[in-house]
Length: 209
Image (cartoon, rainbow, N blue to C red):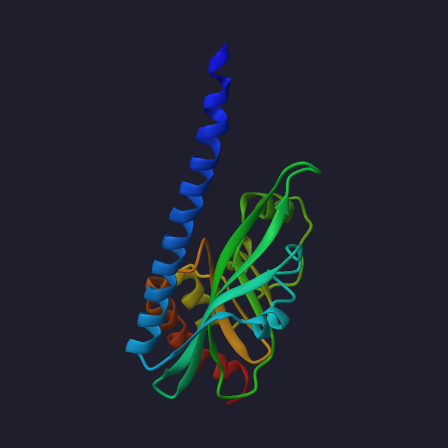
């Protein structure tokens, strides 16, 4: 057919239209992030390489292909220094299939020295492996350890907090943090911080503070 030339006209228009829409959407999102930070007296940074150096160990140890950290918000919430940022990496399904995946990390810089802690809900595979007899050190509470993977000191009070909130958390480099899958969303920050603030005094207890 002689109509194949139409695609030579439409393709650039479609590509150009998508690029224009993408840039406009990105600019709107960036403006909303800046406004969110400004309303709270916090600071927004579009590209923050400093946090990239923090993203090591669990849960980042398996996802270090072309990592980057963008959209960082930091500031004071009461007497606590808080932050949230977007972490992303390239996930390869095969040599020909790859896509960038995203998570949002929100945390509180602890006002006291603390040991590293890691806790996440145990998935079906993890439960099967544990049932098969491959058990790693946990809290000693069999019912809790069946449902949660933990590293470091996790007190009974912390166990109750984890079960109640269902949040995966870690303490690393003196920062208590939790994370969610998906692109950066400022509306996740306040609920995450409200939960983490309840955990701070419990961590102080296991840290001898």
